[in-house]
Image 1 (cartoon, rainbow, N blue to C red):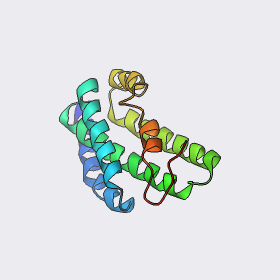
Image 2: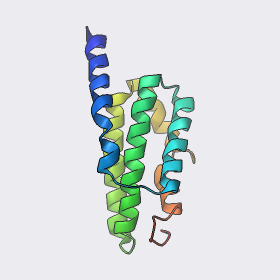
Image 3: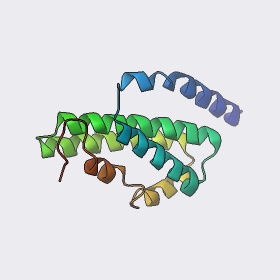
Image 4: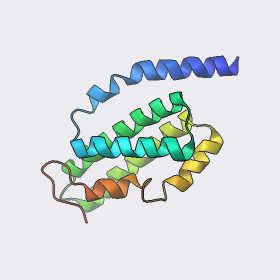
Length: 135
């Protein structure tokens, strides 16, 4: 019964998350590339199943889109940018914890410490459209 309810919840979340792409507006090709690359790496390293991968891919897209927006909005305010990026990361991890099994989420904690998993560092190296690189 628990698995059935979990499956229904995942299906519901997948159905409603399709609208999330529109809510975050346009993202840069570099942000899309970063999101796709991180999602594929997470698939390999964390050994995600198909439903987990789909949801992780959507969460990564939303995270990278929000980070791109923050890089533009806070291009001249390093403290504000750092605060916003940390908020985005905490929100992502809270959502991710709801998608992954506990042991998989613990593996993510190690993954995010690697160069391929440090999305914040990747995004800071890739300036948003119209913004200067963050140092």
